[in-house]
Length: 153
Image (cartoon, rainbow, N blue to C red; front, top):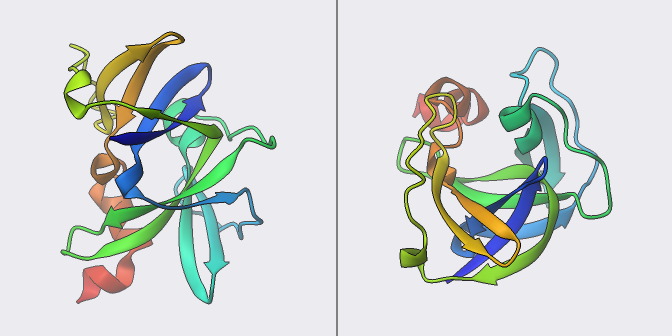
């Protein structure tokens, strides 16, 4: 299976490529006043608004560094109401992929109530890589704010 690699600080993480809809350069994102700290804002993708989460703000409490390798990773995100939506994830150094059998990932033995989206780990010549479980990325209250229309139906 193919995985997209990226970094949060100095640590490496992976997303299943099947969850990735598109990989974009860091485009201008319109901020949303008073939004959750992890919400970078929204941008227009071919006429449709797409909310954007800054993974560095979510995980580390600081904004992602603006560099050539910082990307917006568009993922298919379940809204909790049986619908999928595009969600932009700002990720640093999102320029590499790796192939692994999903069975190569094992539980780390450490869990975090504050980061339930941290999944199992694997390793390569550069060290440990931790899987991000996209469906667990947003707390329900934030998910419902970002995808209000779906929550109302």
